[in-house]
Amino acid sequence: MDELENYVKKALGSDHSGHGYAHALRVRSLARKIQSSEGGDLHIIEGAALVHDTIDSKLFAHPEKEISKLEKELAQLHYRPEEVDAILTIITHMSWHLHDESEKSLEAKIVGDADRLEALGAIGLIRTIEYGASRGREFYKEANLKKVNGHYGFATSSETTLSHFYDKLLKLEGTFQTPTGEKMAKERSDFLRSFLKEFYFELDE
Image 1 (cartoon, one colour):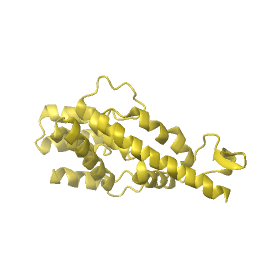
Image 2 (image 1 turned 90 degrees about the vertical axis):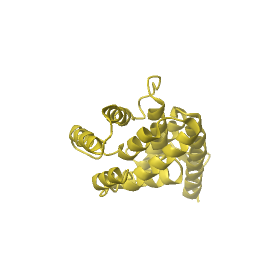
Image 3 (image 1 turned 180 degrees about the vertical axis):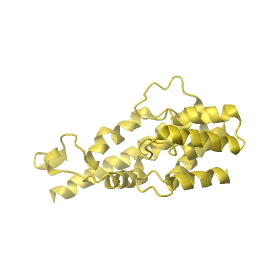
Image 4 (image 1 turned 30 degrees about the horizontal axis):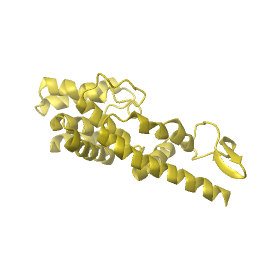
């Protein structure tokens, strides 16, 4: 596992979009927590959680090359062929847009929940701002807000970080695949809603 951590650190060490090495470690930690309640093969879960962003198309221009590199690395670290297949299957089917979870393994559901949890709560808030800044996005635009009875609120989607809360983050709560992940998601989503309430309150002042 130490050698796999080093591989992930090298692959993601220069990332400043919220998808770096620290994120990978937190996803693994969350996956362990969920696994302790839900079960599943911890070896597969930990491996997939660690490497899930090392092939991400948001970070790499040629993700298919990164998949090939990762496959070789896992083999060199003595993962069995069926374990390599399991890990690659998990990390290539983690998109939040994939709502049909019926064919996913328990391990895939746990790693997916762990990654989605990282998009919520205080850390999720920070990562969202980091990612938006890395892409040169404004946090919000006045034109995309509305006032109802003199108070600000969100009106229309745009290429801003604030829009990302509504277009994705607040929709994640209903996509969790394990009871443990679902409970944790509710708590973290409530935090984001509290932040937005405070944000609009301060704009009104």
